[in-house]
Amino acid sequence: MTFDDFRTLVRQTLRNPEQAAHWLIGQGWPMQVRWMALMLAVSVSGLLAYASTLLFPVPEGEAVAVFAISSQPLVLAGLQLIAIVLGAALMAGVGRLFGGQGRFEDALLLTVWIEVMLLIVQAAQIVLSLALPALAGILGILAIALFLWLTVQFTKALHGFTSAPKVLLVMFATLLVMGFVLSFFMAAMGLMPEMPQ
Image (cartoon, rainbow, N blue to C red; front, side, top):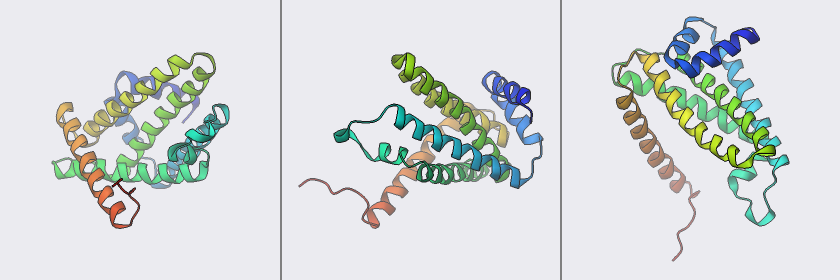
């Protein structure tokens, strides 16, 4: 993929994400290339998060776990890698439960591309934070909206679904179930914070 192809795909993703998803799937890239793209995306994301902590350090008393992780790019990249692979598995698996025909390989490619789109927003956010901090905050909210919108549209394209609201509803239900399951395992392993008496 050339840089011109990359720019064209970014514009196409914003204008018509389903068509962009079909183009990505149609390229037929081998699985090794998809894993390499994943590794590159999470590495760049970890470095951008680390650069952000260097440019905008958090005061000593206000450092929380998420900021502590951001200062460790390898840990952050590893967590993002797990999250993207899990997200791809859920995109493929849950979709197939509802009659879709999408494959994990294609879901992985699409979730990696969502990460790339978010990296572009993340880089723009860092630049804006230096000049216009208020706009950078708005860009962060837009990044969440972009993530949800692209996930819904890519899931539709992957499985051939037609209803975006239904896909969004199932996605939220899946997130709720995953949150419950993860909290159960964390509690069983003693990782949940103790409630004050």
